[in-house]
Image 1: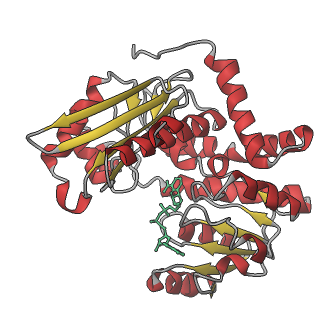
Image 2 (image 1 turned 90 degrees about the vertical axis):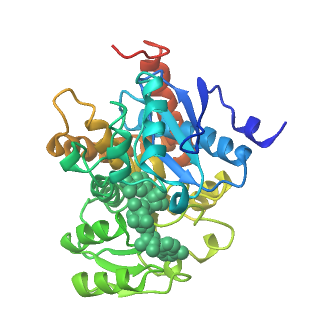
Length: 357
Ligand code: NAI
């Protein structure tokens, strides 16, 4: 079987859409609507071919289903890909054609920003469909989802501190942050405010200089940040940073950050556990952004206060996952999957094939 078929995992629906006038070619994958409408961002990317695009849509939509379930949201998992180079292919006509494709699903798929799409794009998509989130506040959206992603990640760091050191306080703790972009620089601010010590690395020199100036952070080379002798290593840039090359060099007690797919392979979760390093499963700790955009669906509109309160629940959910790992004798990553699957089974049995009212 070819590559995309390996990614099929009981997906409920996959839609191929095209609009020749604007050049739109898109795939929307709905993994599941068992817990509610599927929500996930739109990735605009110059895929090598349609197979690569389909593989990505299938893989990412499944991951969104697990993230939403673990976050306790009444949402399923979906993801869309637009095939093309956003720098040259993106236009108002294309985004609006895409918005009509999303609308045609009647709310079974709700979109948001992802790699290659921004709040201004969502504002255009939203002119054609009710089922778009992530536009700027002036357009009725909640704006940059890095805000609550960083907050939820910080709450997760505190939960890890409680687990290991008996107190959520990060005062005096040393946190090494890889990537100080939209999420990482806000996380750095929280850690600094809590009295923690920071080391930071980023390929963007101005980003690390800003952190050094604002928070007294020590600047470290990008190839060295994972190996800093810190209490916590926090990946907030790339996926697959816990791999065969890095794992032996870690000196931290905790790996906890917002980057998606931090483990290059599931066996790296076992290797972390064997080394006595606590791993906060990525999709549990980085759900703040999803919680933020999901709140836009509230009948009364987005409330940052309500969304922030829900993101604070990441602490309790992470503690539940860590407890499950202990009781089942499995890695924290495996426990996260079991935690999500338990919610899908318990609550998702109530409804299938979600239809908008
Ligand atoms: P961003 O693009 O604003 O920041 C990423 C930063 O990493 C940039 O400053 C970039 O220069 C830096 N970087 C790139 N390569 C690097 C390297 N080799 N070493 C060190 N730094 C490097 O992205 P954002 O929004 O801050 O997201 C960070 C991570 O969190 C990503 O993996 C993203 O997928 C994930 N995430 C983000 C969410 C959000 O709401 N923004 C939600 C859930 C996950």
